[in-house]
Image 1 (cartoon, rainbow, N blue to C red):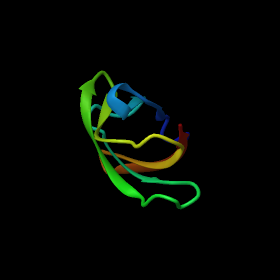
Image 2 (spheres, rainbow, N blue to C red):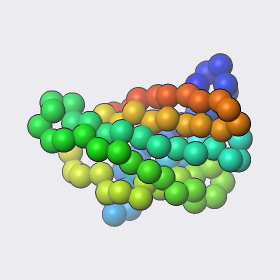
Image 3 (cartoon, one colour):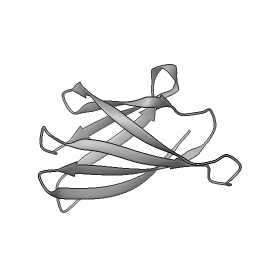
Length: 88
């Protein structure tokens, strides 16, 4: 992330979907993610995202209430980075 100059910030948005802001990445960037419960009490699952313009993305899936660890993968122009964030 730092080497590429890309920054990803996520939060729980409207309707319990994840709202992601991606800065510094090329316009054709795509985001995917895996969510897992930190205590393993709920099964993990994949998240896909739709671009919302201006480096903003919204998850197509709802993130259930509670704490989740989300591992994001961002890919653009043959470059890729991964980051993990705690979402409550």
